[in-house]
Image (cartoon, rainbow, N blue to C red):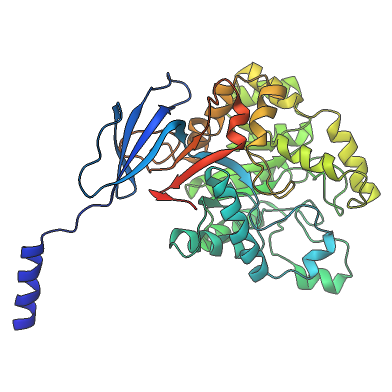
Length: 422
């Protein structure tokens, strides 16, 4: 009893612990890409959240830490809506038989830090083996390893023999490597969604069509039936989860849109009619233009089999066409890169490609990686803007990215959840 009284007395005398306060002096501030840039400003961060933004470079209160970015432009932390942190570019298909989930998680920790240092403070990871992605997210959330905020799908759902399934090995090896991510029929597809939700998935991804880099599938056409797609989407939405559909061929894109997916990933061969369908249904396009850069860089190097190389050459003929059609039609186009198809850390190269191929202005491209991506991910009240109450996810660059979007390829300062990144 005496010990409890002494502890209570000490608490009363000491008072509550002082809040962790950081004051940032910014030369210019882009609080929202759709709003005018602010001049010299003071941003106050308390316990990892933005408390306020005031004009001028105001003195920091006693005990606060001051960060001087008065010669730079500060803007919200960037969001990449399509990454694979546990993967690496150019890996041969037989690596599936060698790399363990534990190795993938360790590789992911390395890639998470590289991505964070590049200015991407939030990512949506749309494909990782086993529990590797879930483990990486937990380690980041608990502060064990540095990295961006993550939304994780886990293993994408696939048809047997389709993009995302194991192929190219002896039957007994395929059985050993089975990721239990395939499904046939509406009931089994719904069950797979529930299993992923139980494992901790934040979003469901499925392969609506074949893939460019997969050896086992039979082209880029529609994979799941319409009924299977509806079962996946309806089950996920019933659990409060959004759905992303990998889709290249037009018929597969249209089927996924009709099924009610929230986003189409890639959308390579989308026709004008399908783009209009996306506009009517409110479907977002994540064009992943940097993926084609990574693919082009490895073309002819021997990394790809003849089958894969033929699909590569076919897709490279239409790079960016769907993104421009979507942008011109008013379909939401969100920033996502397919990191792992190209080396992690080069994510910001997507900005110049959105300007070049989609016809976006720099401000629109930045919005695609901030407010637009935050809306797709359901994180509008957490990230994507610099505003009181939101997470202190901030970056700083030299110059004005609204006039030269390539400035974002050279990020000079990163803060995530109120913590500066070294």
